[in-house]
Length: 324
Image (cartoon, rainbow, N blue to C red; front, side):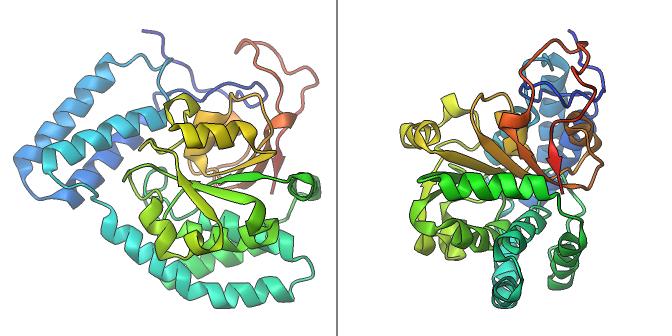
């Protein structure tokens, strides 16, 4: 079995497949989820045993981290009988984010550039992640701190203006959401984009703390714009696995905005205009993109080079992504 090496491969377009460094992250997710789902040691041991077995048999060159997470969490739900182990965490995240909206709305409205401010808020929301970022503090104080950090970060004007121009000229926008709680912050950016031309997409079933239709209703997103499901419980998007309504909108929209690392990992090989908005939460993703772990990122897919062999040099030695 050929295992991909750890290297920075940020200037060629391809789907992000598993790395050896993804293994401890997946095992940590497994332990966290199975412990939330119940306290039966025999079930916990069986889940871990089966996950270790499938990891040993998996060809890492053909599976993305979201692929493996989907399989793992389906196994956890099956063996524990808990349909949504993260349900309480998602509810708490939604409540905290909703409590912050009035102050954030005022801040955006009073800023000199409401669009840029809303982008910062949406990026800050991507920290609410129990998959790639297990140390998430979803308390009010914790999220307020993250928002302040996002507002203090230097903003790449080229990235922002590319997104602004693309959104302004687009008559239809598909906005692919990531996590519960975070989608409350997404409301503020969608208001700037124009809710009438946005379709928001959420996961088709419970997976980690990713947002579902239930969360979209809870934070008022469903009352602001059209919300659809991908029809799949993958913590990312593999278009061919999604339902027909999602596929039609994905291919027909003038612009796609995709939030979060899982969406980047699964959509980075798609040859169409996509803006990825995320925080690079692990060293593997950071090296692949060409940024530092913890950076807030606006990545425009049309500025990424076409796929080429892994050992091919960058044509001009530069990084073609655009970062905050």
